[in-house]
Length: 231
Image (cartoon, rainbow, N blue to C red):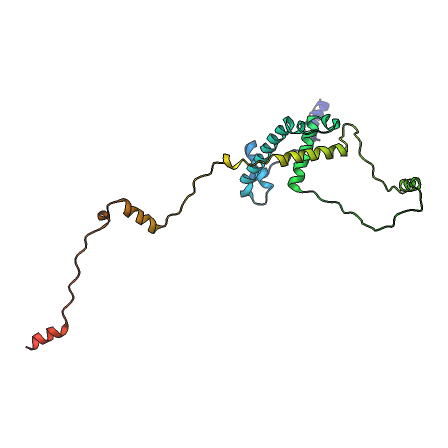
C-alpha cells in the first residue's frame, strides 16, 4: 500500500550514516608506494637536504648497533667489575639500559647547566641552628632529595650509575690498537713525464726511436746565382 511505498522511498532517499572514526592521514603524493618506500620517504623529509638522507640514516643505524653492542658488553662485564654499593647491584637490567641511553644522549647532545643566583649574604649568627632550620622550612628554602616511588630510581643512585657508565666508556675506547689496523698501501702519483721515462727504461729504446730524413741542404745564396747569369 502507500505506507510501504513511503517507507521504501524514505529508506532509499535517507543519507547513509556518517562515520565517527577519524580518517587516517593520507601520505603525500611523493611518498606513495610500498610501505618501505613510504618509510624511507618520510625519513628523508626530516632532513633539510633530502640527498643526505642515505648517509645520515646509515650513520644512525651504525651508531645504534654500536651502542647496543657496547651496552651488552657493559651489562656482562663492566658493571660487575667495579666495586659499588648494594643499591647499585639491585638495579635491574632495564634500569641500567635507561641510564645508559640517558648518558649517551647527554654525551651526544650536551648538558645545559642551570643558572645560579650568587649573592654574597652575611653569615647568620643571630639565630640558633634550630631557628635557622625552622625559618628555612617556613620560607621553603630547601631542596628535597628524590626517593624511590613506584620503582623510580633515586637521584643519588642514578648519579653513581651515571659515573660508572662514564668510567666504562672512558676505559674502552672504540678505536683498535695500531698493531691491529690494516692500512691500504699508499698510492703514489706518477706524472706523465715519469711514466714516459719508466716505459723507456723498461723497454728497448730502439722501439721508441723512428727514422727521420737527414738534415736538409741549406739553400744556395742568391748572389752566386746572379753572378752566374751575368757571366
